[in-house]
Image (cartoon, rainbow over all chains, first blue to last red; front, side, top):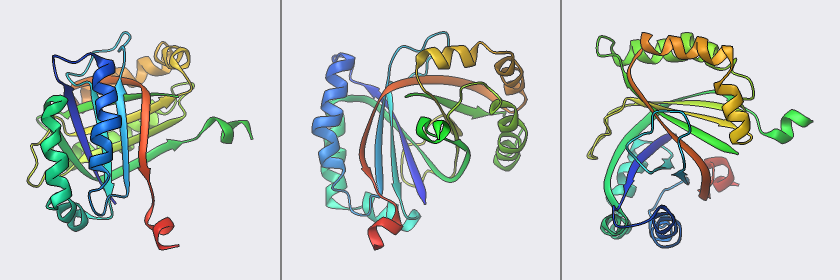
Length: 114
Length: 114
């Protein structure tokens, strides 16, 4: 498994709500057509509380079977379409490519209650 | 569910391997003691390929039941210990707090094969 993490800064002219709605309802349906994509999760940031806020408004986690599948997906015409749409809701987009994941804890509330 | 995403820049004096090993083997065992933590996943970045690389070397995804549970966890003595260890392997650490997650696709290879 390989995981592409996009760090996304919203378009300055959009509210957080507009950014969220465009991403989920317009961009995601284009992006999910990229061949070989095994997972696609969007995280939209809210108030950071007491923590040092990141200079991004959200992340996308996109995974593929391996680096070859990722590179094939990102070379596809479907990726060109999704890539062309990015300027419509973001001012900046950078990527981490992670082949090394460590799951330290993974519990859902239901498992804990059981 | 609330998800805390930490964007982490490694200490300049460490190699990626040293950074990874410290994070997973020394820091994670301290951080996992934070009360109320439901999940903790570490993603260490590798070569970005043709993409614009993020100015971070990895991310941590940490989740809690809700914002109150997160704030209680982050006010705990266990968090003080883990927080004090952060300078030993990072040069920068910023956070996104995400209460709004959209799962667009979530397939594992086994499901697709079945």
